[in-house]
Image (cartoon, rainbow, N blue to C red; front, side, top):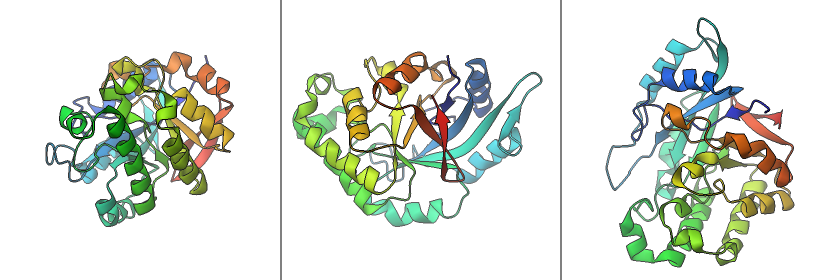
Length: 272
């Protein structure tokens, strides 16, 4: 199997992980990753649990620098490239704050993600109680359009159909129920030269395809999309390589023969 990068990974600096950074790096070596990018959460104004996803960026960087030299981690027997990134929880009103943060640090890679819609996280039932199943899915996707139009200083949009993960009935919807909005999002990503992240973390939730779904990946390619990134969205060592045994084959079947890794905010092509 071709060695692949994993460019979406969390450590104890994220509010939903208690995994030491070094443990995640060591597991990535064990799992034969080509390289990794650390992307801890920053979700300002996380209304369900204020402060949970605030990120101490200086301490995050300090830990990274203590473990790496020039983007390389070495132990007694092995080494691996380790890049430094962040996952921003996008909301339109945070655009100025996000720009101030991103312009103040030398991140290699910035993921823009949607975790909250109208001050609610689809992870929790209150979101579905308000919008219903079909309405909740469509509102989530229209909010992505609002996020991109408000702020686009990111490199890739993360787990585009994240909303599907947390509702069994949402997973039963057909792609046609929201294809029109998805294609509008894909058009915006392509026009703004932003990558589409292929997130294998979906498999840990019992889904049978990544986020976004295979049809979205195929549509992105048909529309001329070229920039894709890959990651497992791991929050503990046992999740580092989830879904990676099927990833190369899946992407080739969707029309891709390469993916991209961002370093110093610039995309570098890697062959599958």
